[in-house]
Length: 171
Image (tube, rainbow, N blue to C red; front, top):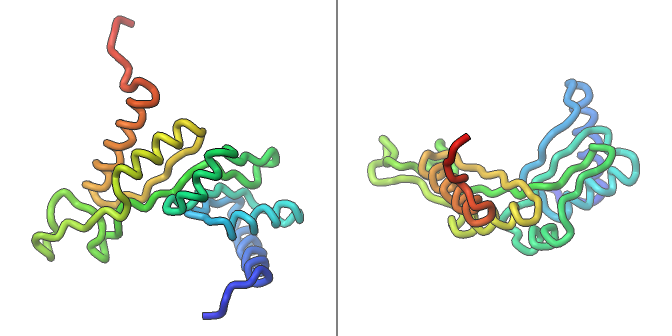
């Protein structure tokens, strides 16, 4: 496989935008971007080549990157072409590879439940930081156990940050 170069990345980007336009696509989400991709998108915007709306999600495993973004805050383009205001977490695998994290074992592989791909304390930490710094947290969670675990961490983060759930009272 040939190495990526800045010129090849620009060419691939321009081809992708042209293909989007040809097929009526005006915007997309890019889940799990790193520094190189962010730089490319910023360069395309600066050169007036960002002819599509883009919502970028920072790659959740690069803690240094997301901490830098927490410090500077979300990037919301006034032209609505480039927005970076979320973190993407991959919390389990896929069903086909039996990596999705399940509550019951796979029927064709007794005793195997899949697995988490991130520590759940990291998911909760990221949710808390997202709330504090104005970032959404987008989680890949295919299995029912992965969904339960991730949603439990989100609930815990909300409770710590917003005194959630609200108490019941008279309306």
